[in-house]
Amino acid sequence: MNEFLLEYYNTITFCVEILAAVTGLLLYNKYKQTAAKYFIWFLVYLSVCEFLASYVHYINNDGFLSFLEGTVFTRNFWWSTLFWKIGAIMFFSFYYNNILTNVRFKRIVKYCGYSFLAFSIIYIFLNWDDYFIRFFPIIDVLGAIIIFLSTIFYFFETLQSDKILMFYKSLNFYISAAIFIWWLIITPLVFYDIYMTNRDWNFIFLRWQIYLFANILMYLTFTFALIWCKPEND
Image (cartoon, rainbow, N blue to C red; front, side):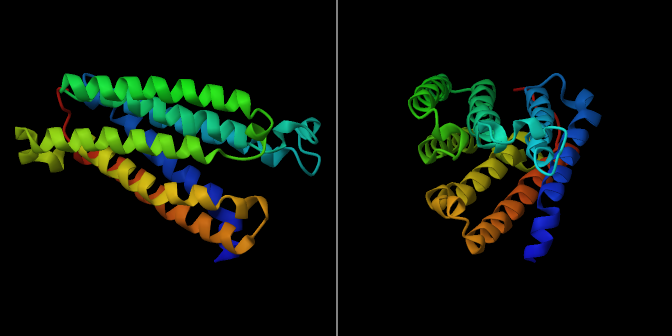
């Protein structure tokens, strides 16, 4: 299993990301009149960013990016923090601000997103050297709180409206359920990232297994939902 993870972890993750993004693009006309079009472009954004994150594989062994060896860009913590841990949270803050109908909920999500972005920028600036060598647990936890807050608001609105009658046909329901479960599974791992820096391979392999399961579950849910669901007038 460990050898399999070493060999195919990145490939499998990238494949399920691409599957969701391509499915979204193929069905774009179906959703182009709804807020779901932003989610499709977000899936494309994730695929592109994940591909760019693989630049680290071309630094060692005289790769074409070998000139980066010995620089702060040897590892891609900085890029993952930027495009996923901050970028994804800002997207979902924007997305839920578009699909929620309760004005108070929309404002809370909106201002929480702005506050999170401001805090992240200041925190990274104050810990600039660490930005290139590790992830920041505080950013992960605050991001997870925004995700939980946004999805709970959505579920509450759904329960209070007629949408509950057809929730199983709602793309936004599957998106909300998938990201809620993903962040619920992944967030506790940030408190154990010290074992990553200490190269504890037992923890690293366990972490990869959890991430792989969570990623496959989330992106396949997105793919299924894009195919199965009907467009909503948000």
